[in-house]
Image (cartoon, rainbow, N blue to C red; front, top):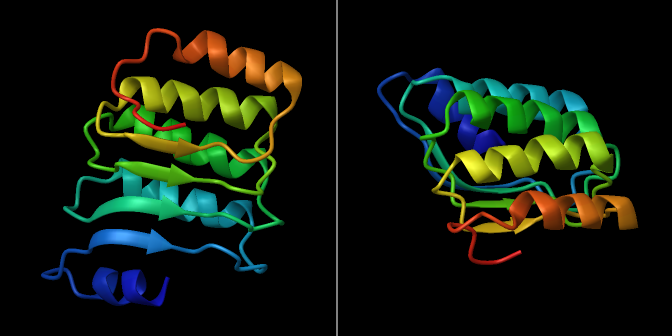
Length: 135
């Protein structure tokens, strides 16, 4: 996060690359809201990979915020989203899968902890997706 905040303080500097925030026990759904602002803005920053794995305080709201922002900006060049160990619940999972279907750049997705119902929902939503390579 430090690397990203430095890039955002200097408007001439464009952050491009992976943002690995895995295992940070202090991140909450508000982090998802902050990240959604980055994804929805057209300022030239390009987070290619977002790893939020192991953030136990994050839940469905993070995925909802991020999913909605990527739906609003379906050309954002993110290629990989990781939520390993995060409980996205059905609402967050649904919004995230909608974003994956809308954004053809996303090639890899780890959805974290999901229920049987979530797995069925994900299966139904992804059956027409042709751009996702790894789930």
